[in-house]
Length: 120
Image 1 (tube, helix red, strand yellow):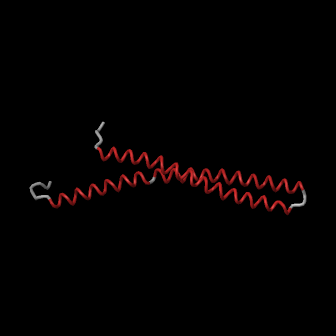
Image 2 (tube, one colour):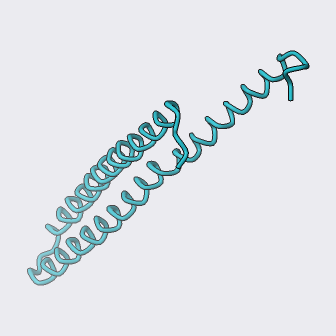
Image 3 (cartoon, rainbow, N blue to C red):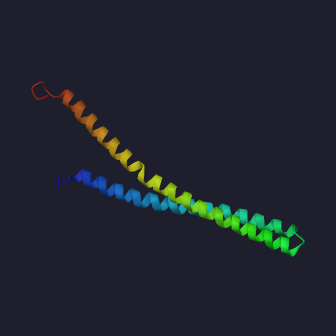
């Protein structure tokens, strides 16, 4: 197994911190936002129930409102999970690739300033 230098170890720790932190934050914020939106829609749906004079029709409409809210919440949670995974995982390989590109370019430019005998 190859030994890791200090910068690579820092990169690994930063990558893990990003994955955990960004994933948890994104999941929580997206879940909260979706829950608030769905709750508002459910309140609007419930307020429309006052127009129903027939008790059975009102109960059927109420059940429909609940079913729509539950389905919307389940879909929103799935979307929040997907978004959290994307936000947590996609930037990590992009960051590593960018870091290696910068290191490569710095070394390449540095070699251009080296005396001709040291180039090689």
